Length: 123
Ligand SMILES: [Cu+2]
Image (tube, rainbow, N blue to C red):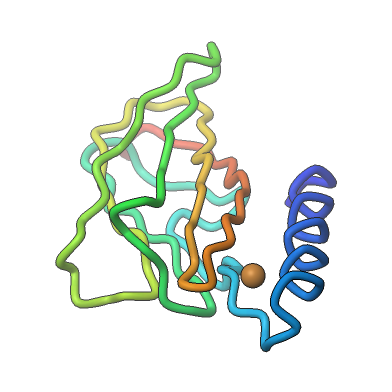
């Protein structure tokens, strides 16, 4: 969890309070696969990013960033039956990666964050 992510989340939270004066419902990441700084085995990797509230899966985004900084936008499953999640999958070779997520909550606020992880060779 980076300092940058905390800072971004703080700004969004402040804007939410000032703009709506209502219960904040912007998306906060509460669980994921891979875990932040976690490890998965190479191959076809199913991934999920779970939030504290319902999110707009059509207007959220998951980007895979490789160690050479090249980026691939991943397809988000929109009928997973899990409205609090962004689900995707990718074929991954061993290496280090980051998932850069951007989630649009129903209150109209966007939150962002990075989940760095490592892919290891199959045993
Ligand atoms: Cu909000």
